[in-house]
Image 1 (cartoon, rainbow, N blue to C red):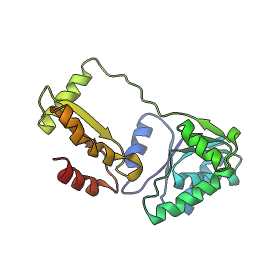
Image 2 (cartoon, one colour):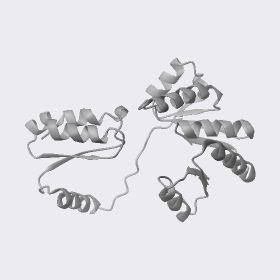
Image 3 (cartoon, rainbow, N blue to C red):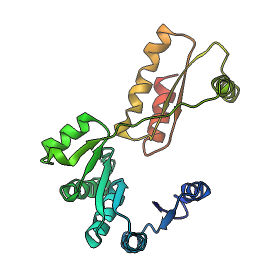
Image 4 (cartoon, rainbow, N blue to C red):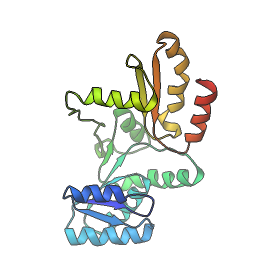
Amino acid sequence: SLAIFVDENEGRQFLERARAHNIEALSLPVSTGAATRALIKHIREQRIDIICTHGYKADLIGLAAARRTEAKYFPFLRGWTGENAKVRFYERLDRASLRFADRIVCLSQTHADKLAARGIAPDKLAIVRNACRFEFAPTAREVARQELATRYGMDANDVVIACAGRLSPEKGTKYFLQAVGDIVTAVPNARFLVFGDGPLRSTLESFATTECL
C-alpha cells in the first residue's frame, strides 16, 4: 500500500501509475496535519503493520502515525541535502526522530557507520543498497543511442557520457562538469549529457556555458 503526497505540482502521475498497476495507493494532502490524520485512518482501516517512509517529511509524519497506532516505523534514509535553512531545520528534526524508529534502512555501510557514530544502536540499522534491474530488448540500446544522436545532433562515433540525478549539492554534478575538459583532451569525440532538475540547475547551466565550452 502506497501513500503519496499529491497536489497540483507533484504526485499525480505517480498515483495514477500505481493504481494502473493495481497497487493500492492513498492520496495524501501536503498539509502535515491533514496528511498525518489521513495516514492514521488508513493504517487502522487496513490494519497495516509496518510504515516505510522516504524523506524527512514522510519520516516525521510516519513516526507520528506509528505512535498513534500499533504499526512499526521503518525510515529509509538517503542522506540529507541541507540545501536551505528550512530544509536544514526539518532535517535536524528528522535526525532527532531516528532514535524512535524500530529499524532504520540505509543505502550503504558508510551511511550506517555515520548513524552509529551519532549514537544509533547498530542492531537498529539495516542496509539495502540501491539497485537497477536491466531488462532491455537487444535493440533497445541502439534505439536509445539513435534517439539521443537525433535529439542532440551527435555523430554515430561519438562517446556519450551521461549524468542523471537531482541537481543539488550532494549529487556532485559540478565535479562531472569540471572533468569535461580533461576528458575531451583524452577523448576528443566525447559528448556529455546531464539529465535532471533541482535548485542548482541555473548555476550548473551557467558553469557549463562558461567553463565547459
